[in-house]
Length: 213
Image 1 (cartoon, rainbow, N blue to C red):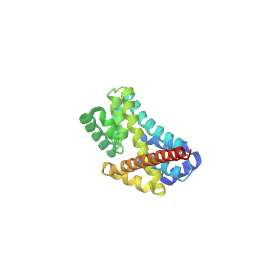
Image 2 (tube, one colour; image 1 turned 120 degrees about the vertical axis):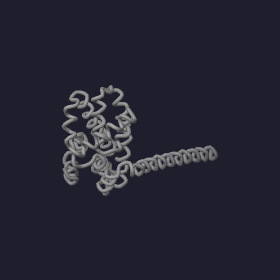
Image 3 (cartoon, rainbow, N blue to C red; image 1 turned 90 degrees about the horizontal axis):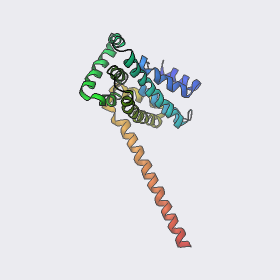
Image 4 (cartoon, helix red, strand yellow; image 1 turned 45 degrees about the vertical axis):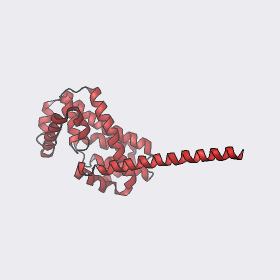
């Protein structure tokens, strides 16, 4: 699938296109998850899709795809992992996943979100290691929400440049992680400032009414 094909799918199938593009990420979709999520945000900025349902479907696509990896790891185990090792790129991701898992334990699930490919391998490994689904869901789904929100929001801000910026972040990973997080933080500060200004305006208006009466 190319980026143009993704846009064509979104035009034809709407929200479902976002879900399946992310859900199938575990089998190695050509378009990185970062780009798909940012595209989801971009098409809401253009008015093609509504923001809230698009975000929810995008989030469900992210966590469903990773949960599939957990289930495969828990019930399929080592044979599938050994087959994956034959692919050089995935083999490197498996090695990094194993190092993260050994060093950080359960928190490796949180860290893995910011490493392309590794985010799909780690759920498989923790599934193999029989981590409870409750613990997996608590860590993965919470981080997934923050991760999806960050990239979805930056997609809304960048609109037509979602593909280029998404690929840049995908290529440099943690080195550019501060960009989406900084934008999200700026948005939160802006909203809080707007709310405070509105509340102050309400208070001034109420005071003027009392004086007038």
